[in-house]
Length: 316
Image 1 (cartoon, helix red, strand yellow):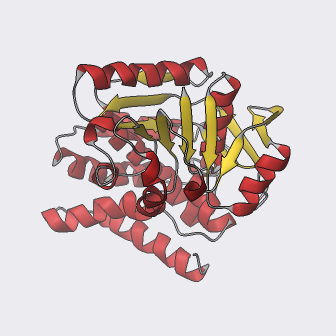
Image 2: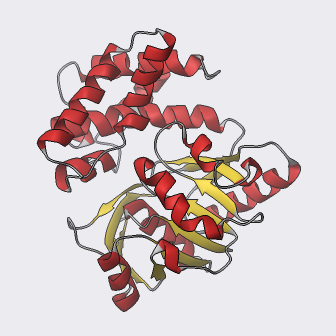
């Protein structure tokens, strides 16, 4: 399969590396010029769950790539999604499928401005990845082969057929992937995870393992999840609050191989002073709560604190 990775950050590079190793025709698209140039000059260095590897894969700036692709896998940051799609709209033909694996909520509306909903697949993944050294291009690490789930947005036999092909392609690369029939529930479940782990680790400058050791952290996480569940229910999604709390807390356990991982929001803001995706996580819950007159005090506070941290660190 010919695949373009839209957004060659740590996650995009990790996926691109695995798919390329498995024999797919893969290109990386990114606006970081030094990153693109270094990948093309000397390959992409990848620490794949403790194994040092180099993958030789082509990288381009988005507007410079014009070959037809079967699939675009979107790994941009949420707040960059619209502008990145604008740069690659020439690739989005009537036959091109788009798989969105972004964190956060509300992305289908943006994607559908650039391609037919019949071509859109939504997914979630819990692969934990990072740039090995801050601001060093072409060098990434990922510490676990987390599961990916995907589903087509519009129900049809053809969309389901191609969705299963995408899932099989990802599976064959060594990344566990499942074609499911409840992706919206999975997206909300992942948003709960990120709304807790990403935001709280960023505010407290902590990895997930240490976060779990803080007094009363489970109470705070449970309270955040209750508010996510209240908003999700207005969109027809039922979340079991106790099950979700156990799921989120499992990422702080010493038995989880990626527990010492600093989530992507922490990497963006604390390490690199970049703006975060909080408005697509806690901020989405806070905003919808105000629209629906549903109290969301924990998510309101978290959103304010993350934006406050952005201001203090002069994030851009």
